[in-house]
Image (cartoon, rainbow, N blue to C red; front, side):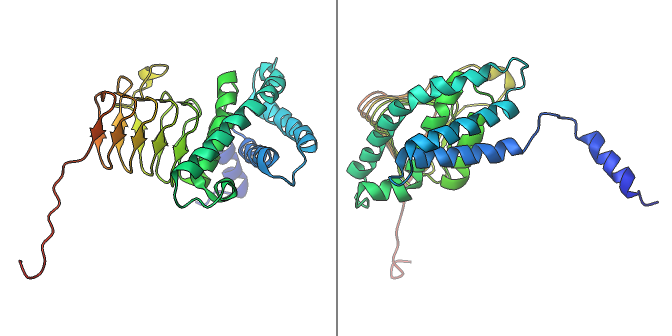
Length: 265
């Protein structure tokens, strides 16, 4: 016997058990993220006007995301606003790192306008501050928005130093407890991950530490909270690392590649 429309509606309503699951939060967070990006970088965008709009959007995010009756995160906007000049200064250093390191970068404007790796870093730094303030859900939604656009999955809990260069970005994964220090260069497909995934590992350092001036080439996988890549090291492409690497090391994948011509087959 076919159910009536009324029965179907009732059955669906019974399964919608989470009263705080509001997709409007995702939409508003994406709007907030884009407006924040334009406010910081677009020369034709009014900073003073946009800051007022951003505050209104932020207050709406608070109303949706902060479920405590007192809504303590409502007070975060002023603290976050104070941090924006410092974040922008770091991001300008990141952009310069792209120009200095990528021979394909013809101008600083090209980096700001077209580099997915730079966009991923921008949204990471903006979401990371909200993460540190304890804002629920919004930092992760910001990072997932950047993931969708750039192809890089950077958890807002990661700690990343100055002058960070993320080339191409696609397929890069940087876990929540990762620590990356200054002047680090990472290429596409790199994973900075955990050795295992279990709920009891929450609040424990699960992801690696990368010291100053390290280069990590494409598709390298580095796992574990006790794993440290020493300063000035170079990690070759397609390497698999679960133990610490001393400073000033070169790590390469030693798989042998043989080439035969048709005359020798």
